[in-house]
Amino acid sequence: MLELGVKFLVSYFIGSLMGAMIVGRLRGGVDIRKMGSGNAGGTNALRTQGIVFALGVVIIDIGKGVIGAGVVPELSIPFVAEDPGLSRTWLTVSCAAAAVLGHVWPVYHGFQGGKGAGTFVGTMIILGPKLIIGILLVWASVLVLSGFVGLATMSAAVALPLYLGLAVLPEQQPLFIYSAVMAGCIIFWHRSNIQRMRSGDEHRNDRLMLFKRKKTDDSNSDA
Image 1 (spheres, rainbow, N blue to C red):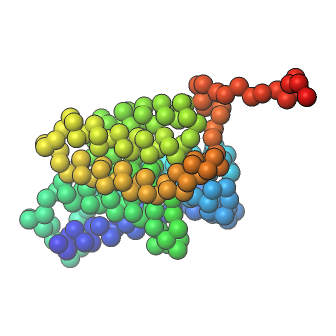
Image 2: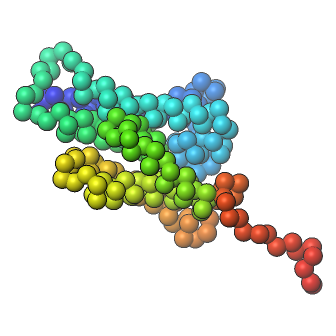
Image 3: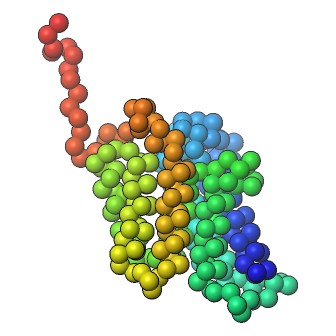
């Protein structure tokens, strides 16, 4: 249990390194949590600071998911012996979850972080690399149909455990459980997006939509 606890904390601390805050400091102290939607993630970074800033945020946030799931479980930590009774699979899944939790509730930034999607994708690069293309296809499809990034993210997160439940159970039960828990968490962490969509206040990216609503030209309408 000592190995699990220590490596869980290491992954959590790595996850707490917020890409938005790191890039913001490099850009002179920009804090995007005080701008736009207030979310310290790639979407708000793109909307408020531009593509270069957002790209740096996304690379860091995905990268720490990769490190949390792919590097930390294999670390040799002084005074922490490898636990022979601990499943390596469940250790990896636990470290992956810790990295995502660190992103959402970062200890270094007052527990005010992002919504976990980028770091979750980073963990899936390690846990299920063949699934990444499917996740991105669902995300992109919903985005171009709806224009809502949050809805696309939630849809992709939900589609993953649905697919795994039909295709891989019972062989890959840990991966299914991890993806199902993360899907529920991502929906919960996007609850403000859901509320804004219901009230009609959610930002819609019309430029990415395939089927756009035609705007009525008031100047040509009858008075």
